[in-house]
Image (cartoon, rainbow, N blue to C red; front, side, top):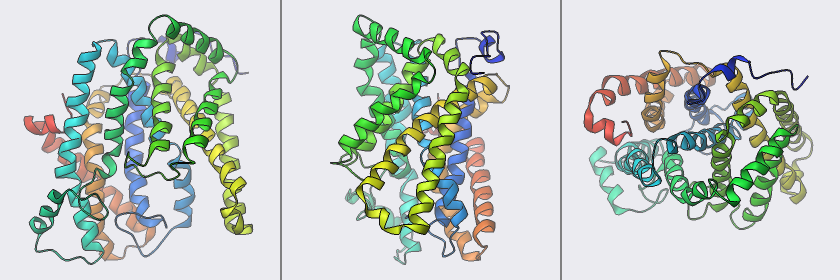
Length: 391
């Protein structure tokens, strides 16, 4: 049943020079990210603005999304790096990463992120004599939350920029000698049924070791080395598993294995959640339960990423006239979306729309406003194209 697909499957007839499915998945994932961040307003977890009303059902959905959304983006970014390096030298690639990642990061930290902190402070009762009065505090360079200097959701851009640069030696190594022999060994492993699933073991070992010293996911780099390594391994996984077209067909053929692995780890995760929340609350502080939750979550992340890539390759690896436009706009959309959500949410929460009414209204307004800002302004102004990472 697993190996019924052949090389003549629809996905494999698409040109090997571009993976349209990766473009589609990137767009889908970042749009979902907007809804995820709106959902943060309505679940008990800390966020910048919060509704007094909470949704348990929403939390159930977002628990799973937490382990899938950003890991998939890092995997896709690693895969995109392989295709970028087919057209550029390593030095050219580094210069391109500075232009497309570092410049938008700096711009975002001084222009895009501060309004989020401003509205959060207003929401919490802090008073300012206008935005200018608040904005001066950014230049105190005191890190958030004590101060107003932060990269907030742009931590993804910061980490991706660092991943891109520190990985260049590994990319070189994979192209000759022992690196090629490692890739040959990887090919033999992935060819086995469920072989790619074993990379989860590398992720688990790294996290069990590093989380002892850096237990919290902070997105602040200097105290976030466990989560940094976690996403770096996903980035490398994406690069490796698209670097040979034979991997594409192997993963396509084994997509049902990845789906079953995802389903099993998902059931274990929700089973543990139900047991802790409703029957054995004391387990929340027991070391073996924490360890089981973490290891299962790391496996769920990798398995769900593999399943998404494999099924995406089967169903989405097709061009469409709208895809280039979406692919260009999705990066500025990502940079903008959280600031728009916080600003829109700050005002709309005052209307007491309820959990689901508020969620859909804030989501829709934020989506439309983010798209409009890109389409009507950013796309058409040369300097804005530069600072938002567009070509």
